[in-house]
Length: 151
Image (cartoon, rainbow, N blue to C red):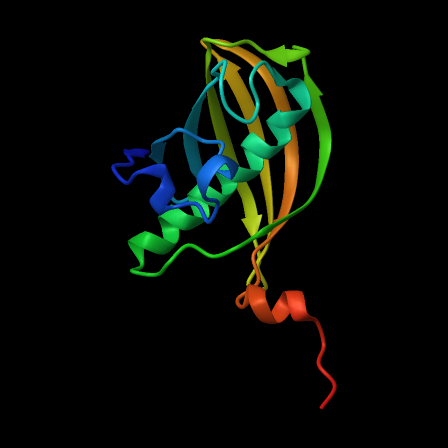
């Protein structure tokens, strides 16, 4: 059973400023999450192209992970979108004035931080985009980005 998310989106995603594309966290549970985007005429993606849906989906996964972390008393961590399968979008742009509802469903998250999620974007009752995303959330993103160090 999903519960309402009362935290502001900025407190559960590691993105900041204009790079935080989500506007609201709506509801979630152990395996799923719903967030919303208001497509606006100003901002980074006015008349957002259909392909930006992949980033909306990825940030919704980040919001789910950040919300889970906050519930444990931890801070949200940086994660990486590794790839997508079968991204299908029935609209060339997400129209200004519409609210997009992004829903993610966890298939699995392994102990090493590798995860797999089914995602969809709806405008009202119509599903306009779907994909399966593979993500990775390392336990220490800074060390991961530095790579192996010579001793």
